[in-house]
Amino acid sequence: MIKKLSKSIREFKTPALLTPLFVIGEVAMEALIPYLIALLVNDIRSGAGTVVILGYAWKLVVLSLVSLFCGYMAGINCSKASTGFARNLRADVFRNIQSFSFSNIDKFSSASLVTRLTTDIQNIQMAFMMIIRTAIRAPLNLVFSFFMAFYMGGKMALIFVVIIPVLGGGLIAIAKHAMPIFRKAFPMYDKLNNSVEENVKGIRVVKAFVREDYENQKFRNDSNNIRTIFTKAERLLALNGPLMQMCMYSVMLFVLYVGSRQIITTNGAALDIGQFSTLLTYSFQILTSLMMISFLFVMMTFSAESAQRVCEALDEVSTITSPSDAAEEVTDGSIDFENVTFRYSESAEKPVLSDIDLHIRSGETIGIIGGTGSAKSSLVQLIPRLYDVTRGCIKVGGKDVRSYDLVALRDSVAMVLQKNMLFSGTIADNIRWGKKDASLDEIKEVCHLACADEFIDQMPKGYETWIEQGGTNVSGGQKQRLCIARALLKRPKILILDDSTSAVDTRTDALIRKAMRTYIPETTKIIIAQRTSSVEDADRIVVMDGGRIDAIGTSEELLKTNRIYREVYLSQNRQGQEDFDEAIGTEVLA
Image 1 (cartoon, rainbow, N blue to C red):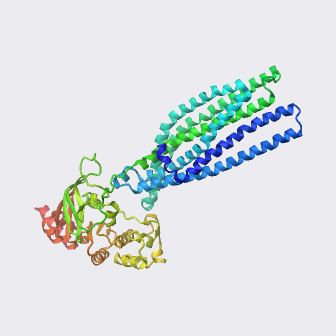
Image 2 (image 1 turned 135 degrees about the vertical axis):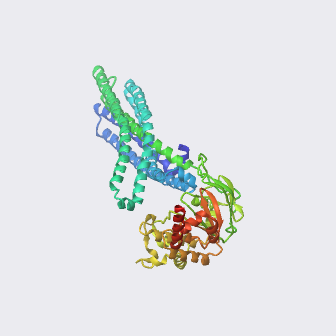
């Protein structure tokens, strides 16, 4: 885990290595200062004059300034290394997330990924900062101070040999019980973030159904669960303080009692006042170091779970990758489903799609219709390899989609999904997702074809109008038209509209379909719809039922031969509805 995380240090290796070097200098100076003070005290007792005292004074000033400089440089380099490391780590995790397939994304919730990119990496940053500074400073200070204490105080310094194992054993016991609690806490953070994300995205629905009290209670419950489990962990970690204080005051009492006794009984022969005062100083430094180690230990315990969670996101390998000898060009928009079966997971009992055989010619317009849950969306998501087939194969341009470079394949396919997504930025910025260097004239052209210019021209800033995250400041129909314009700008070989005109009126729907026929006549167009009017002029219509193809044909053919299509068609047409109701009524009477 440490090896994997350390790869993100990269260009910040120099400040990361300089920090411990400056810390060593700082600690060395702090260890020498009490020693010089002890010599000064003894010389004063021996009647040293001003010259001797001034000699000690400038040495102490120099040591203090060197210690200050080393401490300052250690702090500067530590901040550069830790913040740079966190930046790189965050970028590495985010980059890996971008490579995830849909099945990888299904494994992690969006709230969990956000927590890993923010809270968890912040914890790791704090831990790294303490490792390169405090974790070097505290042990070195402990060793130097212990050596000097032994040099100045002799056998009295052995008290530290007794105290350190006691403190270490206590810390290990605390961590052993605290770690499992922290492991349970972070998934609760994910749940809390998910609750916030869900509430913010659905705030209009919450207010429409007057569910504010329910959402507040749900948030309080999640927040209280986090409070409860962290309180339990903090109760254990709080034992660290009393344990530290007990060890500290035990040492101080021992040094004061034994040292004073030796001074009095030997009249300063075994231990003089200078040595005694220095020994007290070193004792305080040793105990301060132990306290810092104790705090470091708590931080490491807390951060270990964060590091594990971040490594999970870094280790996740996309289930869909480009082959080594990948094809770089899609020749045309022909699509062939050959005996395709698909499951979202290997453990699923029932396949989502079964025995799909479908052959679509390049430039053909295909309508797909079927009831909710008939796997219409699942079918088209296999074309750009958002998921891979479980059995069989799908060919685009005469080649298996698994033989293409992923970028080349997906660049030739434009999808307008059921959940239309707009990003924070201007309207023009959102449209340019289809072509990053598109001119304003090109943007206006596709917006006209998608009938989006009708509302864009009415906005005060036109194409520079700001779109909020998720497109919350435009209506559902406006959002759909912007997403269609974005897809048209791409001029793909295959265009997939997944129920993407459901929020526009039938007139606008018809205008958009007409525009597609004239603007991208050679593009293969697949239109998933609930309205038969959206697909009735398609070259062929595929009727889906229960993950299988129930029928294929033109609208006229399916009206005569397919029950599912006929029922949907008649139920959506007024005259047909009357005939349909009359037929049903006659059947009931019979």
